[in-house]
Length: 100
Image 1 (cartoon, rainbow, N blue to C red):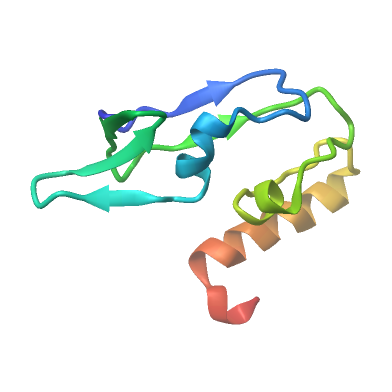
Image 2 (image 1 turned 90 degrees about the horizontal axis):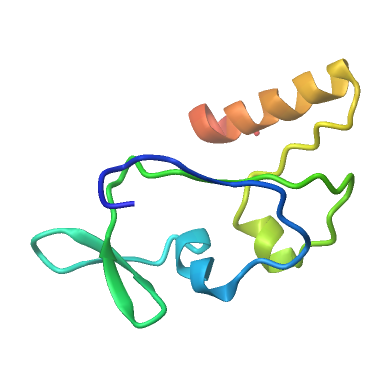
């Protein structure tokens, strides 16, 4: 997190540990010297380039609307055409929000 390296959490089920909710919510704070995020009772420096990825083997995980609204969800069980459309939608959200 501190150095901007991505983190991959593999094979998640439908439970997401609440300790990472501040990261999902992008609840990042600034103390004039650096950016940090609270994880439990600790303040951890966070690089703006940091990314977190969660994967699951579940075909359709039942996540809360809170988690879905703060995540980019890519369903890999779709057809190739459907996947292209999902990825294009994600790209448009990032690059050209006004076209969405």
